[in-house]
Image 1 (tube, rainbow, N blue to C red):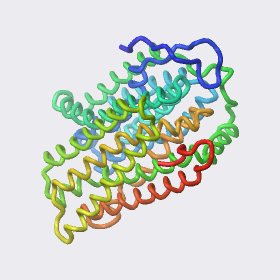
Image 2 (cartoon, rainbow, N blue to C red):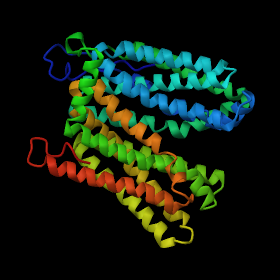
Image 3 (cartoon, rainbow, N blue to C red):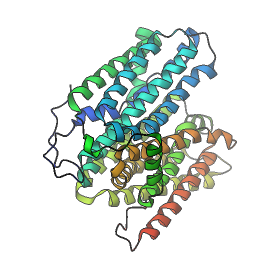
Image 4 (tube, rainbow, N blue to C red):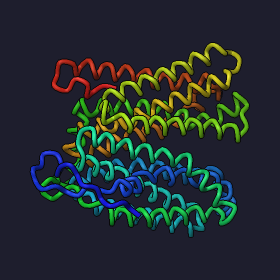
Length: 422
């Protein structure tokens, strides 16, 4: 059950009113941290689902693609609406929709119905995540807000590790449908958490006009605001590099380095663990150092690790890169990203807090969409090797570094010297 709601330091940016009740951290975790469970829990069940629904590998994999697309669309479309309609009702509606979509998935006897239901489930999860981040921006400021984003990130990173394990445990007992009934239970808990632990954080006097023209105008305003859009653009490039790793590492490491599936699972779990450690260290130090310093350090660490991976692959060519060196480079990269992602999100939300829902939609949805579109790039580049994967990742990181440096240089001399860079 949700923890008792915390007491907020203030009534929000630009408000001189009475103290407002802040949302429960556990409730925010439940609302914003379930997207990984929605996508990862049933991966091991795809073959069983294919056989049960008498369909093809392509169509059953499309259920995963639909969920990922829904996650991006839910963030991009619903976040701006919450600036006009408020947060709480939208979050509750999203959690209910997530639950209902899970029921449809569990009962589905058609692959087409399953694809539509997964799209809806992803959309609902993305909507909840975007509006949940806006709730943090409504309620907290400065380093306290940055610390909250660190907590949410640290917990959300557990999903990719725990999700497949939970699905693997459920599959032998209840088949693939049991996994979706588990997600239904998660949805019910999310709804209860939202009802009990998340108050309305955007009062009517702070809401914005809700017409389509106004929604687009707010998005355009933020897209033209350099201190906001520069960190978002940098994160898009970093996320593209990361999704090349997510989409290609399984085939690359098992084909090029001849890892068994079990050995690859160990490598992937280790990388996920270092990412969690990075986000926890960010959470521990952000109140003392601030998000700008930690973002710069984390971004440098991740970039250096990707450059080192390319160097390892080049030195080994045309042979096979040594697994220990590849493993260390990937683990250091994910460690750096564990600190970079929450710090960059906190800074982007700070710069876009006048339209917190729209800022959350753009800062969360655009990188996710960019990464999803980049996932198959390793295969498109040709041979599935560590060198090809490293070249793709390094190209995006180099572009990210250039954009971050240019952003910082343009911000120098202004009132917010470090707000635009990486």
